[in-house]
Length: 249
Image 1 (tube, rainbow, N blue to C red):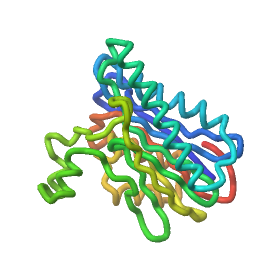
Image 2: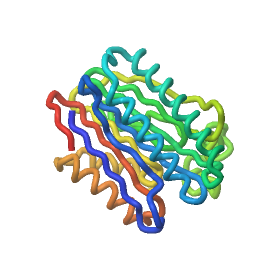
Image 3: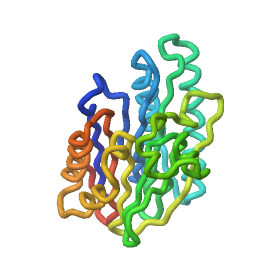
Image 4: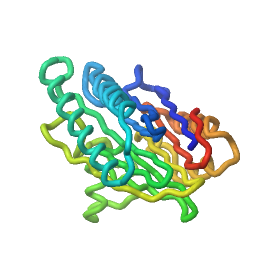
């Protein structure tokens, strides 16, 4: 497996409230995570950083994720735990009140990938069947699209595009959407915050991901393109390419 993680503050924001990473467990399986924090007084970066630190530490001590059922339960249990931790922290620290974060995560083994998400950070899959978004945004505009009140084109420029219906750390319980997909050699997963997906059209993502460049160059090109298109938000992505060889970038 080849992996790369990259984050960029963008061109407008004074600091980066995104956080993420790609971590290996005791069996060499990867957990890729992107979290896009929100909240005043820099609390957004507290929420996203606490989430990533917790999941990294837990994942690195994990082994025997041998089936999709085990992977899905691992994500559900640990996301529920960090949700409680974040909520408790925000109630104990006045400056963190109302903080929260999106999360998109993928447990990647040689035969399957288990994806869990809350919010509007996304996971895309590139394989021999094409390129598709495999998460569904928990956002107001996505609900309006689903119920036929606005078109997908209207959603792109809707004034309430940033309103989330679900976020990690904002309520006692929050539902994690989880799904498992089978993967084959050369399949690619792209996890990203909305700083990328709002700025880079899918056809441009495909063009970059299918180029002959290295994974690191592809990641940088995606970030550069988001910045060229305005870079109003932090930009974070993780790319996992499934292959027989194991290396990390």
